[in-house]
Length: 404
Image (cartoon, rainbow, N blue to C red; front, top):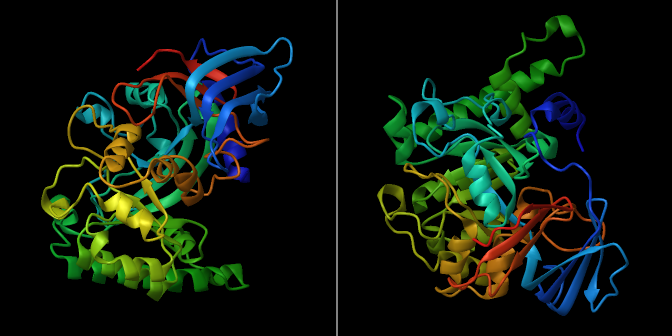
């Protein structure tokens, strides 16, 4: 874990929500079917949890004494939302709880999600009850560079479960930028502005690297964060939905050698070969997003099409401009299953694949020994509308026991 995360957790741990049980329990989770996402599903599976970590996973394991036992029809890893604005976008849709987009300038990579995230936001509790245990949340699409994202657990312990203070820098290509700013007004102007900013960041990085400190320029947060994207320290999360904007994003990534994730990607089914050749994963828009503006050619089938083409795909909750401003990725994946995605592909799209995309797969996304004990228990098939999430465990602690 990075040093700056240790510092942030130390400072912010005091903001954990009062009344949360701090002690780790010894727990055994039994499932008629356990989807580990690290191999074939296990019938009559057992997951043993000790000190917040997974101790063992297997079929018909003997449960040690003093372990509290939870039982379910189906067990999966905690769900991972690869792109959301929860914690910055609030449930009431009023100015005071909408912190996800700053409209004073179109390029602001220095804006930290950490400084706007509200661990007490009701939407966090809402998605947690539906099995979402890890989120990559932060500034929304709508600016050429809207700011940073951060990774945190949805635990009631709040900032104590912070995993990464800055994971990605959010970019946007397309018409939505022109709706929020006087300039750019077109995609071509937006690309020109981005290229100019990235070129300026290249110059800044070279000047900051000179041996003589007296010859270095004054520190510039905007330039520094863009330089950090160029160096690969941070991933460029580029939202682009129309085919021409997706191609522009691919060109930008190639020109500046960006570590890039394609976001939104409503028309990505038109460019399967190009996306696969670029080796870029996709965080697809919510399956049930509204088909308007840049998403007008979206399809319920896109997630499945991408998966079958061998492109890593995660399904996100994304950003919505209406109450309650949070989609549930479990439901979005369910609709993808109804439109051609296999159950295993859909589960991967909200567990193991997003964990890899946000570079947290050593801790979350699958049920394996020594990984974080983030587990969801269901009373039936997770993708059937008659089934419910009944128990959610984060870091070995039961955080919800309400069937939703």
